[in-house]
Length: 383
Image (cartoon, rainbow, N blue to C red; front, top):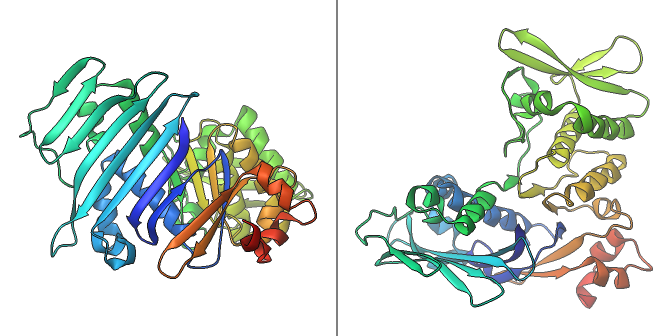
């Protein structure tokens, strides 16, 4: 189940846009064109399914700061997902600004299952309450049932009703992994010994890298990480290992090929640690339903980008991958495996976007590198 179409209305720079991603996607555009806002929209949707929408909005400075142009009164999302041909849940919800307040309310919400026969309405929320339907049986919750104004009914699916489509959709949306600011500086938590615990996915902040690697560093995953690091550092890298520092803590180390040199996470360069973090995100054997990374090329040597692109291509066979980039070298790193490329453009007061699939893109890049074509300005004339 992955995103087939996403409509965004009234959110940040998006007046009203529809985006149709594929399994492997690259977002490009100038600074301020709206690429990061798309990742924020994905994070917003994730929070709406996880029951943390109110906290997310507060962390962004309040609802008015998220409204398009500072003048829109509501935000609306519509997400189409699919796990098989001609069978997809379509979920939409609308949030309204509260007068003279930084808060908001969820004013409408609907879930429709589009299958091979007549579309089936599974859920509808309006000011009168929440209606949940299951096949021919209608279950009407008491309109007085206290639905939180600032959280979606989808986020409470386990508490309200059991329906496989709604449950799977909630699980998918709340499982999205959106990586904005992956800190690897000398003061970041990622460099310190970590509490020993079983973790299999890198968190949004990225600081749990050591326990994730310790949990997964075996068999095929070990081979993938070692192959990626060896490709980036062919004359130096040997393997990772983990050393206890206290009864309940471990530190990540890199063992070198020559001599007795061993570097802890605290000693690694920013670029090396960031590269290892990105490899781990993309190589995770049981990945989240969607992985989005903002500017993965940041702080990396250009020679690392083809390795990163190879891992992204492999990850896209298991999940949906979205990379936002300013780098023509990042685009060129994909070689013959062209990702779906979404071009962002600032149109005076709103973001416009155009997605070009791999097949269409090949027509235009036969005589160019992909990076040269997209960043030369010629793309705007033909897309």
